[in-house]
Each structure stands twice: as C-alpha cells, then as structure tokens.
Image (cartoon, rainbow, N blue to C red; front, top):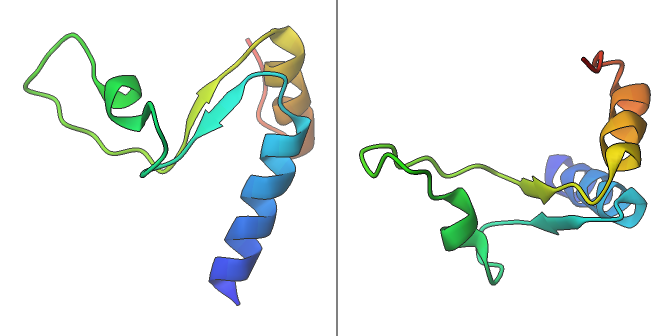
Length: 68
C-alpha cells in the first residue's frame, strides 16, 4: 500500500509541476545529483527542476512548508 501511495503522490506532484521531476533510473538522474564536491555522493529520491516560482509556491501551499 505504501508503494502505491508513493506512486500516487509522485504522480500528482509531477502533474502539477511546470518543470521536471527526475527519479533514480530516469535519464538525467546521475548528472542531476552530482555536486561540485565530488566527495559528496548523495542519492535523492527525487530531483526537481522548478520552471518558475509557481512550482515552488504551489508545493509550499500544499505541504505547509513556508517559502522564504
């Protein structure tokens, strides 16, 4: 059930974005997760490329996370 819920949440999130949402296994994931310090090797569950401020504000409104 949790995996289905996660897929639904990610699908809804992706549908609301004007930008791109990238997950492990998607094209562009490895280059997108790299940072300038090669000693850091993080593997985020999602990488979001916001296209505009609406992408950020819409997410903040839905989650209750304050935007600054």
